[in-house]
Image (tube, rainbow, N blue to C red; front, side):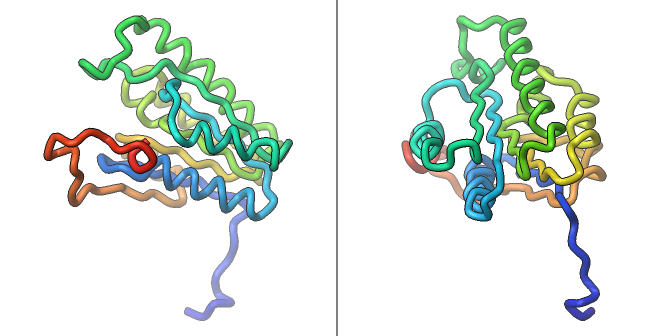
Length: 189
């Protein structure tokens, strides 16, 4: 097939999922590419409310990119994850925070205000029952035709694969956590 036989799309839906690390990092890579292309980018983060490196990075670059970059940090932390769960947050509070974050994502992806919307950890919110499958399907179906959408997090449902253009499964080959080493700041978070 010759290069001229290929077509372009006005926008795409991208999924980064899987059990290994790198999903948020891949989303941040898209953020960099989008901003470098002078796109307006929204980074909507589900789950992670505590301070992580990407929050510092985004806070530091927001003044440079002004109205080109929008960051929304939603969620109430890990949900139903044993010792990692935020014990002081009720399931109802987790669900309400996920819904508020979803509403923000839906507004961003349907508005036409952004060329790229990244919904970081939305797949986790869906898998944990904080969001419904119909909501994520609606997010994809109703997105503005000129807006690309990226969905990250573990456990993206196979039922929705037919709605996406690019899906990458981050597969762990080796991670030092399995040898009882904690996550490294700047590498894992």
